[in-house]
Length: 432
Image (cartoon, rainbow, N blue to C red):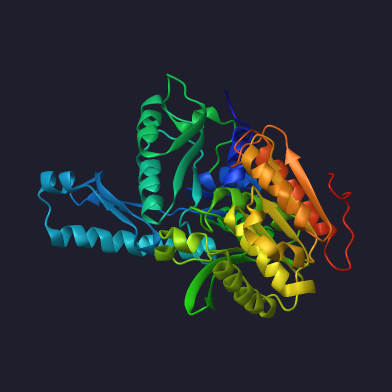
């Protein structure tokens, strides 16, 4: 197998990664040669693109022997065994780190042109390079992104030496490689065009990706005397914002909710992925099932969100117990909520508030999730607003079956687009 160039390798690599799109990943390219490959992967997955700048910490008298690596945000991994074995003084080790930190800062600033580093907390991160020979840099990158808070680390490369690939499979949660030949001398032999990637090309690709991708910012809201955290994404020209209320045992980092949010962002809708409980409260089932408390907090956040979104229409997307909170809050808001979508929700927990909901409501349930499906059918009878129950055949509660979550995202997108004020959907209601 031979690739035309790095862009060709990236496009072919992306064809092996569509299953990761539902995890709403962040794609990180190893500069410099990994960035043109990563750009194509990020483009295909509709994922944000950034770089992972890694500097190896080499033993002073034997630079090829690394005793650790550093990355941005203070991330550092050190092999205590190598430090003990080499008997290098603490002063010498600190000198190496200071030198490499300065070079790391220089590269990061040059490549990003002042843009902030992408927050990896809890995210699925795809580390991409143009190929792996020894694996040292890719291994260090995996360790660094974990230190930066990544929830899951996937390494994706077009070509790799078998020994290096085996080492990466130990360090990463998953490895995707198109070609691993037994006879491996250098990465460049597997490319027709392996010309050097310049700093200017890296900067241009990152800038192009940043223009294409909407910016997500961490936000904080005071609600009911506690400080709640959310991730707000507002694409240019957004016509509405959808606030997500997650369910039991989940959070704003939920890969399923992020996958749906990504589909809404692509359609030009803003999203707010919100934690309605603090980490301590999440551990107490008394809070988790206090639908009244969750609904009041969602209502408080909505008031702030209206100001931040400059009066854009607001919709709610709820999962599990979050669906009950969304419907209860929508009932209190009257005509103030544009639409509601429930994914595998427990609308029954909203109780008598269901009859006061005015927002058009879509209930999405898996056909194999029989108990929840029955609860949704009963709840639908209590709704007095325009509503639809859509059953996805064969899907279970978490919609883990192939294509099920994509169907959820499509249905939610069409529902919100079809029920925004002064906007008609290009998709018939309930179809697509």
